[in-house]
Image (cartoon, rainbow, N blue to C red; front, side, top):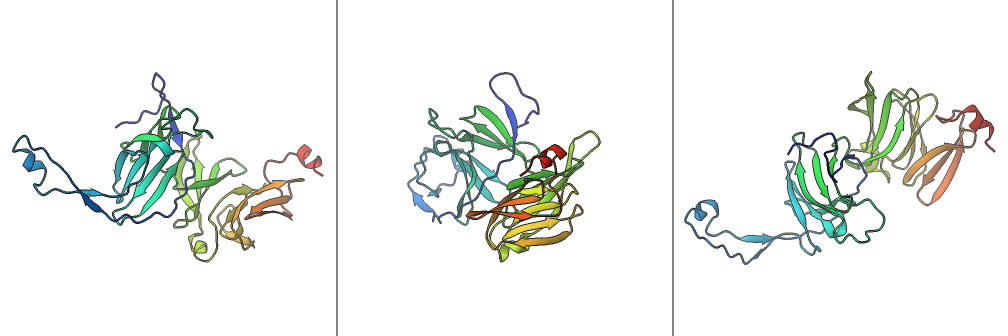
Length: 282
């Protein structure tokens, strides 16, 4: 199926989507045989289906499921339109949530009885294409980052930073823009996967100072990176740390960590604060 890059006529809208979706542990569903009646009207049917074919029941208990899609990496995706979710199932029996808000991004399901995604398919470049009931559109999920979370620009706005909130691949990516302003290929800015083995949390929100240094929340605290990716140091908060922001005169860094808000006064200033904004700070 070819996915057009422009909006076709009618009510369908093609969008690029990169929302964060978190997995949750699934139950093990042991396959079990159920009766299968096969009506064989022509002998050629036996060439297609073994005479002893059995029907195996795998995961069950959903309201109504649709859109099965086999992923070459070795797992099955399927839609749960009623609950606005796409599930992931592996032959080992693991069931997990692949994507929430799979077809409707609103807060209230309202009149939609089946707001979630329905049909799923890959386009020629291997990107997931979804038929979304609630949002009344066909969407394409870009394969840039599995769990994109924090985002920020360099002072020149020639580099885009994205954190990947994946415990198995806890990295910060950098994307450089070309001369025409198009986003180029990604590169790993810093790999913090080893930190997730001993600390709680994942790469999350990030902010950039006026010198281009990154203040990036991650496992157990705040990590400070130079523009070239050098790890300059850390604030060891000791708890899962979600985000941070510069405020007041642009030297105060506010941190949201676990159940509390923190503040630390820095020497550097946050990016994007004009002289007027700094002068008006308390």
